[in-house]
Image (tube, rainbow, N blue to C red; front, side, top):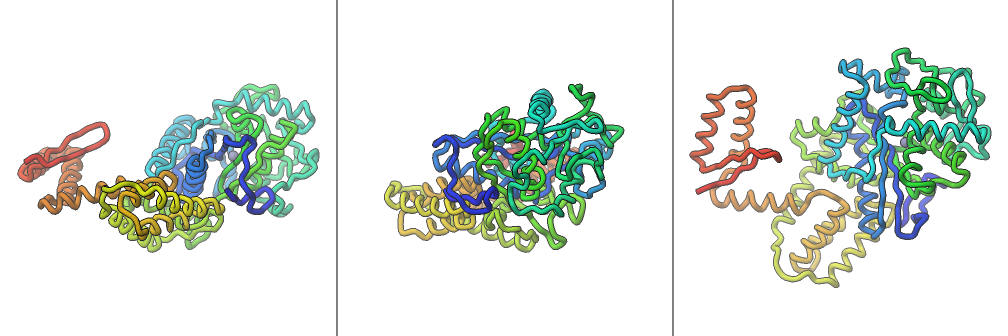
Length: 472
Ligand SMILES: [Zn+2]
């Protein structure tokens, strides 16, 4: 597979350290607020990458951290602790906030068919490991103590700007990750490994360390968690493009100083989602979340398809009009699949030919847009429906658009419609009955129940939600 590697800034053949195994690391969310759909674009594309590596036969282990401590900057650059800010806003403890938004994040991921990584590790679980790593960096004299904090000394490195395209001026952005005008630093590019002098008086989470009561810097988290679960070598490290500098640059500095050898071979960065104001963020414009898309009536998988339509290394412009076009495309695709008949035998020769083409598309720097085109090529293919269904199901292991399930559902609805069953009306009535019950409006709820009974609809409540069927 050919993949663009930010380390080297070129397309390269992806070759893991061990032939069949891929150790994959993903920078996880800072759990102080809901993720916006711009953050989720990155996770969608990483999910496609992981699934495609598995599809290609690799044994993948994927690790993700949860930043529940130590990430101090804010999108608005107000210099407030993000976690503390969230806790204050919602009158909860920092750990309650972290748990709440971790759950919310995975809830969103589920709706977008993003697989949960094999290992999900909150930073607060790994304080001992962070302290160990910082201690070794001090022993090796890659770190120093100044003004109460432990810093990484970037002047000890042969090369700090490993991605090659950052400049001294960019550091202005990086510097605010740490402490404003930090005079305790020896070099402008140095960064904090362990804080004991917080500029936030009310910092809630602190731990004992050889350097005093404090908490870890943000960058140490990912290095340490990656090494803890994946070992000394990592094949591919992923994140949003804004993580490349300074976060990933600092991760490489401290990991390789700690290990004494190359750490991660391949760096995969996903470009931003933009809206008319520029890069999407929590602090400006409409705060676009998966729940908001659902409230507006969008299937989250339409958003997934919207992301797949564009290459991960290009900024993607979000607009509801464009999303509407994707919804139309998704529904048409599902409807064409629903019209296929599940009979005959799979034609292996034809199937292999189309699988080869799909792989060629995806092997080309994860070209998901061409991956989607493969679906349309299959629908147009001169072969039987069974082969087409087989291929669509196969490609959807990577694309994860629930195409077969959505087509089955549509087919069932069409059948009911042909029998005179108005699915839309029934679901509307059930929703209204739920609403009435929630409002303790028993009279309305009973009236709706009678109406449903008259239509021979039997409603069942189960832990997976409400189902219904027609009983004649
Ligand atoms: Zn990270």
